[in-house]
Length: 215
View 1 (cartoon, one colour):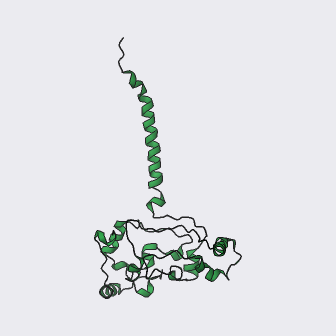
View 2 (cartoon, helix red, strand yellow):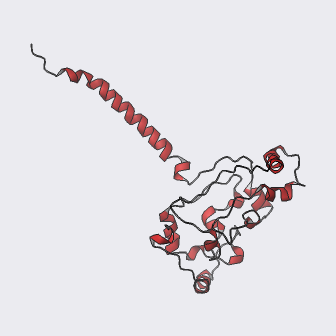
View 3 (cartoon, one colour):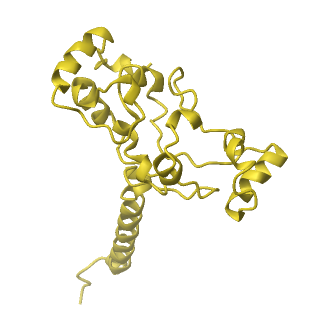
């Protein structure tokens, strides 16, 4: 009796099994990476070489953001504070703390602490901290209330769509310049009047064309 199916069809079950396994593994890998907080950014909360608490320093102790992030008002970068900034206090405070051992070692050796960056705009986009700070955009608008964070995490996507949403309507985010780092500040009943006045005084006109961020 003649063979109904060609000989190569005997390999179909094995081929089907390989395809199914590849799809499952690929699908799991895809969602494992692209669905992870690190990829999605929001919720990304890496461990740091030193268990630094923003809640303690910026919240309970009320230390202004600019004490550590010194260049935020005049530079594109907010900078990660050097060990010197930590030692301004900890040369006298908690000098035997085991948690601060990496800080003391960094101070003694001159090797910087390898902090893990939490918030980062894509390399193909230009972001200037000072341009936002000096136009009345507070730290909280982008970084969330860090004064309540034991361990800092990213709270906004920092995506193009998210940036454009604010550039097209910055009004809800504008605040007095002396309240830039105030995590408790809330707009008052006269906020609309304040916005109308300062938008003219500070020349608030965020770019919405491509060249504004992609240079």
